[in-house]
View 1: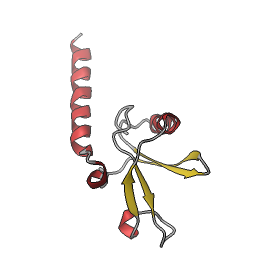
View 2 (view 1 turned 90 degrees about the horizontal axis):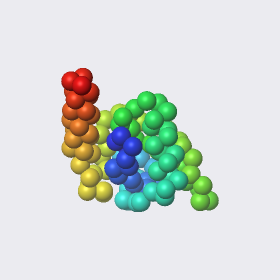
View 3 (view 1 turned 180 degrees about the horizontal axis):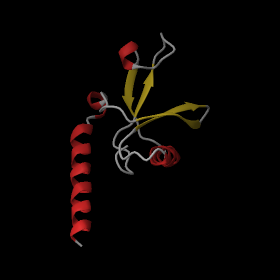
View 4 (view 1 turned 45 degrees about the vertical axis):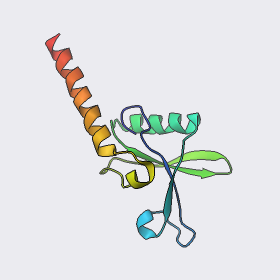
Length: 106
């Protein structure tokens, strides 16, 4: 999540380990979130006051719940999604700075 936009989404699975972390043998596949999943991810990010965050959802029997919100470093999923999150975040920050600067000048 950057701003109020989902910039990438992956489904992580691991049949050999309880965690789905790719670093522990899990796999990641690019997915498209439902409108509901996007809404709750945006709400979770906004609740903690972050402009950039990764929101982990647990999905079972067609239901999605928030697992955690991460404000750590860039993701490693670009190889699966084709998204350069660092570049996208940089552009977002520059636009935010420009808007802030324009507001000060007014």
